[in-house]
Image (tube, rainbow, N blue to C red):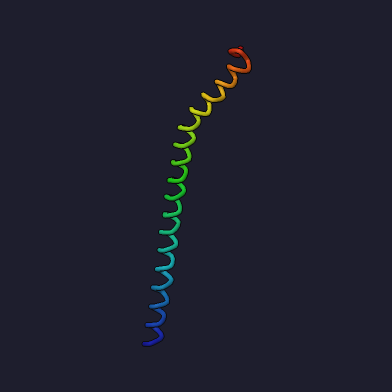
Length: 66
């Protein structure tokens, strides 16, 4: 009887560890998606400002470009 109880407890512990690994993978996936969204937003916002700065420098150096 004791052997069956120990086997059951070990089974429950192993099952719980698998569930936690799955939850951890989902959490990491959501975290990566959030970081990617922030990076895309920052690049899109700053990209327009940087493009304007390069355009000003180009206009100043080249006198208007091609």
